[in-house]
Amino acid sequence: MNAMFKTKAAEREEVEALLPWHAAGTLSRREADMVERALAADTNLAAQYETVREDLAETIVANESLGAPSARAMQKLMADIESDASTARRARASFNLGEWLSERLSSFSPRTLAWSATAAALAVVLQAGLLAGMFVSERQGANFQTASVQTDQTMKSGTYALIRFAPEATTGDVNKLLETYKISIIDGPSGGGVYTVRLAMTGMPKEELARTVKKLQDESVVRFIGPKPAE
Amino acid sequence: MQTTSDEALIGRIAAGDKLAMQVLFARHHVRVYRFVLRFVGDPSRAEDLISEVFLDVWRQADRFEARSQVSTWLLAIARFKALSALRKRPDEELDDETAQAIEDQSDDPEVAVQKKDTSTVLRQCMTKLSAEHREIIDLVYYHEKSVEEVSKIVGVPENTVKTRMFYARKRLGELLKAAGVERGWP
Image (cartoon, rainbow over all chains, first blue to last red; front, side):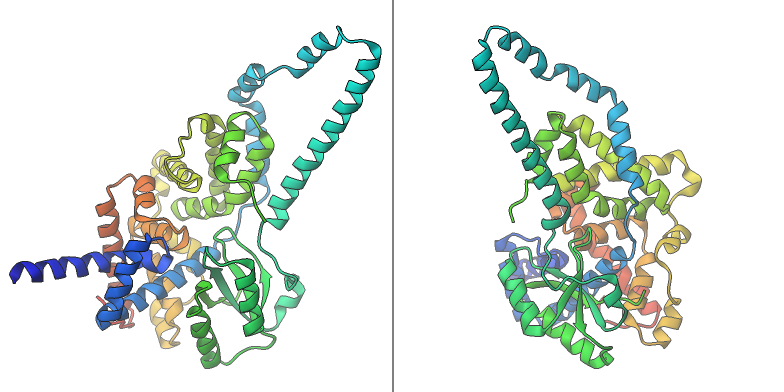
């Protein structure tokens, strides 16, 4: 009997320790199921879990208010890379295409050379296009945006919130949520994968804001949502 | 839209691809910056440090073994750099004063309680946690790191990670209680 109590106590302790990771969505399926079962059966634990969710929300808000580095960081990095010994070493060790080409081409006829030059030029253009496309998509398109993304000017009025979507949420899920609640993405994602959304065109009363946030928090598509602090 | 995985970018960086380096930087630099800033407290110094973090990635990309996520590797390097920087200038170690300089831009906890703004009180109390406790809370809640990943970043066993997080929450509850907010736990 004693052993059974000890096992139960140990299991509760284990679940209690895992609550923060459950709130953050970083547990394995097996662990998440174990926590869910315990939360359903233990109201004290469920109340404790609510405090964990509050802590998570405020941690995100606190980090989001830290701002972002200036372009200087990237400039410094690229300058450091240019002058780094490992860069020069890699360049020397890499395959010397120019040398190889001139050796091979010297043995070809003029007609073969003309065709080869055309094909090579085409390959260069194609590769440049691919690289530019990839870079642009990383800088712009890879970050989820919808047609509702707006400019800073429109942010002056209205009620705003910070939101982080569940990693498994699809673009369709997110769009459906935005449509259902008639909310629009204004900015993001930030470094922490957090978006700013507008909940209403005007300022919402505190109670209504709390109700809306609570409703959205219960949506499976939403990992976290909290009112955006005034700037 | 499908994007190149972090692991694939590291592979290209190892082969000397500077564009891949820029893409990886664009993807992760804000999170790394915020993580470092929590340690050093000075935005300009944090910027210098993130350049150093990514320079290390450039140099060591061929040694990355994919045993953890790239973001976990980045945060582990960032943590090491931030702590080394603090060791070089011990007079500037992150204390309560520095931490508040970063985040404490609103009312004192007592004043905020009077205004019944629990969120503000909670954020204020977070700045009063030890650097160790604040770090683990950031890693779990903001950087979304699993127990195993936090263990790799901080360099402590997984059970210590869980215990540390538990005590960080407990301490936060005590600070809140002292500031007049009763949440029923601990």
